[in-house]
Image 1 (cartoon, helix red, strand yellow):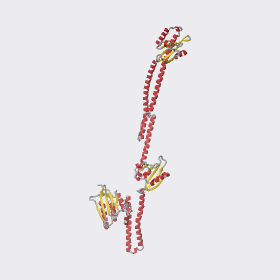
Image 2: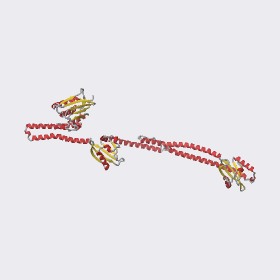
Image 3: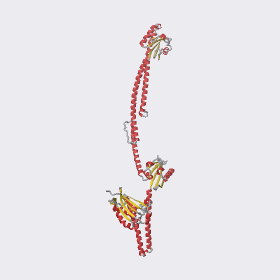
Image 4: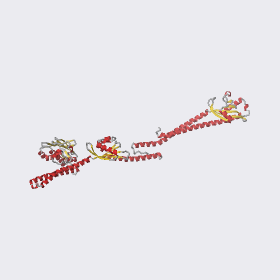
Length: 586
């Protein structure tokens, strides 16, 4: 209960009201009681003085006992009080309520002693004779200058006590009523004061929960109103800052998500705090699984871990290129210490340069291969020219034979240059496709028939197996015929006499698959993944002619159609080349 500001405000008011009312009631009761007693004492003193005046008459000391008792009884009856006449030595001479003979000496009563000393005395005490509190007032009767008797009047105080009790009850009732009203008023004031605080608390909790559009209505111009206004301004500014931070974080997250480079942040102990999807792809680990794990558990390659440790030990940026994994990933690793920020750690950037390196390798291989391909015909031409210059021109039959060889070498170089130009145009998109619905037979039968005489000269059987119904694909007829020519020509070239070459077409789900199957020498498992590279020749292919560009051209033509090309082969048993194309829309 005391945790509530309402009760912390109300309770002091309630306690203050109760203490004040109780104190006031006690004070008024005591004041009233004292006033009643003082008035009663004054009245008794006046009456005692009147009786003492009668007893001060010169002949009063000669009065008989009966006359004295009659006077005492008269005064007692008129006053409603107890009247006692006491001799100078304390002996009770007459009493309105008791037999004087049985009463003890009253000389040492406080009121008697006081009266003998100063003329008037009073005292309040419990009367053993009557059994309740009495107010005693005494005064002296004189004969001349000599004190002869003491007159004492006594009244019981139970009537005053009754009046005081009634007053106390009235004061208590007033106190309780005032306390109830005070409590209600205090609670109402406390509730009115606490309500805006509770509203502010609830609004602050909503803001803490993310409801940054929370606002409060200003209902007063006091401190609470000022606090409400400040809260609204705070919530508005906080909303703006959070919106800015959210936008910046979204942009940063978008950048990190779409970055090709891997980005990873670790704390000083090497625990991973942030990774982007590129790191997940590089190391085949989910982003959720990487967070919180050690850097070594995420990257797993000792070369990268060693670079991180070197950066950790030296506190300097480390840049190094490494090749890791069975996939031979070539990575540029940049590790930078994060200093001067609240969250210290290390920024790791992993640039995947595998493709760049592969392209560089392809470029070098391309230059090497084309140099190798040109070197042989150029050397032959050089030798033939030198031979002709040295005298072969004087021998017409020999000169004709050498010129024929020159023509052959020039044709080979011309074919190489033409295929290079063709491949370059296909790769750069400068050779557009003219796609139209095409019967597959139109792309297969003409190249096969054109190469059939060559197959027969090589002692091979060449067959085409087409489905009974028409199969149509979306293709460029000339380009697809060029692809089929390359595939069938390769099959003829690498199939020994007596072998078979079969071209088939079939539907496979949402694709049309053309297969060129031969019973030739086959391709080794090591060479099979690379046969579609430019200028690549398997060892068995190097003994024959060709530039090594035919399959590369076929691959780019098929891919530009949105299709796939692949090969399956068992060395010594033959090969099968597959071309998958999209069917023409019906």
